[in-house]
Length: 201
Image (cartoon, rainbow, N blue to C red; front, side, top):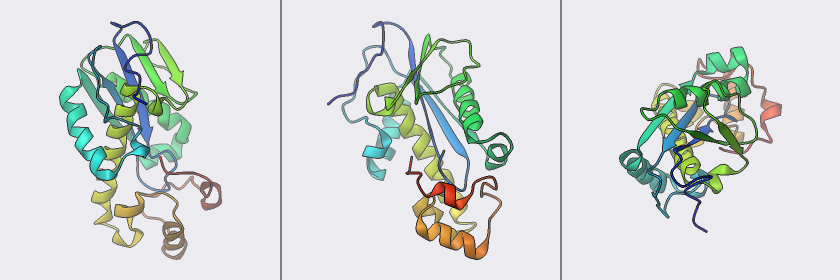
């Protein structure tokens, strides 16, 4: 089923917002915000989790070319440890929104909670990345930018295989972490046992 290109009024400037990396043991959290033209449509855009790596990377170029405005922000593992992952998610999303060159009139936030520091009205959308075009596009940007970062730091610490697991708590990653300990990119506030139930973003 094609995703909805609007949440409300046809000509309201809507912005989709999503994040990637919330459940990872290592690396920053990335958040993205995307505004499309009111009549924009692209049947290839979908929730990033439903796409292959190749599809995500191809769509990233299309999204950046077609968007009226887009912005990507990151929050480091150090800040995540200081303020917790939920607050880091809110900060990342707010920073992404504030980085837009076009001011939206309504924010569509993936998930059920948001601390809005922008002054712009917002609507939380559970499973928004599977229903709304702008949120799905934001999920693709957040995911591809974060994956790119993790592949870069994998060259610094190849034994953790971040190019493959992207810092998430796979059995392999947890085993290596227990044997060799944390790196500067690991989140010190995250405990292994509490991460076992977390799925990939």
